Image (cartoon, rainbow, N blue to C red; front, side, top):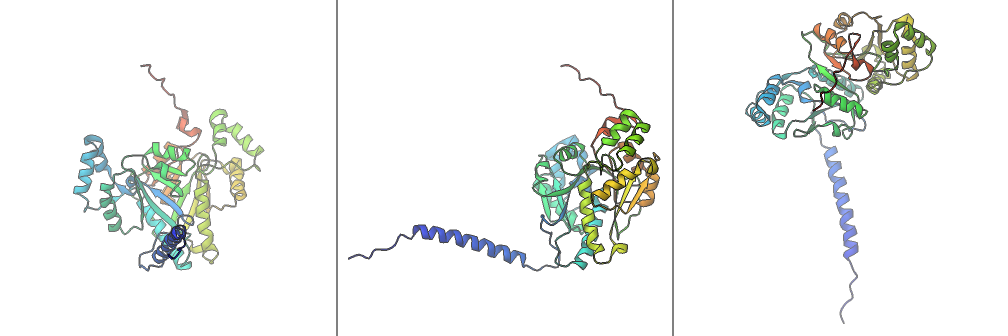
Amino acid sequence: MSEIKPNVSAAADTKGENAGETDWNAAKAAFENLKSKKPRPPKPQFAVTIAVSSRTLFNMVEERSIFEKQGVEKYVAHQVEHEDEPLKPGPAFPFVKALMNVNSRLRELYPDSEELFDIVLMTNNHAQVGVRLINSINHHDLSIERFCMTGGKSPIGYLKAYMTNLYLSTDSHKVTEAIDEGIAAATMFLAEKENELSDTQLKVAFDGDAVLFSDESEVIVKEHGLDTFFQHEKKFENKPLAQGPLKCFLEALGKLQRKFYSKNERLNCPIRTYLVTARSAASSGARVLKTLRSWGLEIDEALFLAGAPKGPLLQKIRPHIFFDDQMFHIEGAKELGTISAHVPYGIGQKYHKGTKIIEQPKQKE
């Protein structure tokens, strides 16, 4: 009489699934326990993620010219031919180095913490160009492990997947697209002369309206003039301004600053923030400061210029990056050596030096 054997196929399938899950968990644990002298990137859910394009991180003016004049194939061939030649620093390079310094300080105080800056190279370059980018990153000893190379397509759709807190590019169209997606972003410009920057403290300067705050007050200035604006700000002094596109980045900086404060390192904090605004202090400054207070945010220095040029003051501050929504402020800053980043947001995009830009009607085809 033959022996009746149980049907083991279903059990085997279940066992196989469990084994696969066990193998995955074991492999993941083994990877996370690997030891290395080189710091590993933090997990994205804990990090402050800064996505930079290849043309903000490195100076690729020559390579861009080849792309525009000779096409993508010649461009890729040039990059492959010169892949052992490191690219020179671009506008975001000092900012990235300063982020790395903050990470070093945080690791000293919190060896096991993953609340750190994580820098992602976000580029529409083709993968063949990746070798030169990797060689350049290693040559300059930059801590950049996460790459996104999209082969000619816009990388903006990947920003949320990478949990991006700030995106920096030289392409204003991509920056506008990112802001429309609700991501803090700015178009970077290289300073026209070089200023010596701090190598121990990250300095970040923000304009107020249409950068940290919404453009609601700026709309009143542009459409009704300063007197109406002053009256409006006095009337709504205790009503917080709505948030602007970079409020979340200031919030992220503040979170990391508080980690130093809790270790009694406030006076030695490697992050310093500045508000550099064209507002007048007595006439319209209280609402700004009360708004920051209502958000639970601090700013290290608040500088109210009452319409005076920002460039000379920024030359004194020497920030690693300065954010403003109006190009004439950006132009004045970079002329005096400030690395600047334009935030294309709000009504200010329709004006230049206080004059409304007249859009030419489109020609009918």
